[in-house]
Image (cartoon, rainbow, N blue to C red; front, side):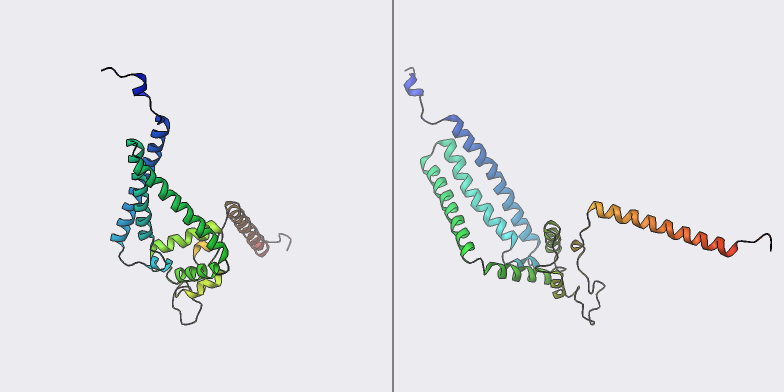
Length: 222
């Protein structure tokens, strides 16, 4: 029996259907990558100083990846198969996440006076373990470079680290110093310092030459 136009008609727009599938597929792949990175980091580094950051980044990556995988799976299959149940699950989960973010924002505003203290404690703990883990070290250096800062509150925070502590008993070569990421020099400053040093060297050479000539100058009429 030949199909009529009424049989071929659908209220579902193919553009909306495949656009939703395409974007969910992208985030589905990202979720798999996050899970893989989290699992790899957890296997390679069993106990790490990054634990001082309250939440283990590897564990956080796995949780976010699994959550994204579940949500995007419902979106992909639901849009492709036009499954009402999966699409409703997709919408409900996204709504819950949005509401949780809203609640977190409100709580952050209400308890804004306590938040700086918690952040300071976390930064101080990270500073103490700065040399214990290369990943933590790179993370702190990146943060100090990006935000043009040195320590949590001031450069004095680095005295909490056993390598940078300024006590007389500290045998470290880095005693009474700070990490290199605290010393931010722009390209313009670097060029100015270089040119200034060249000019200083030239002036010093000129003075030496004048002194030499003065000491060894002979008077033909004497």
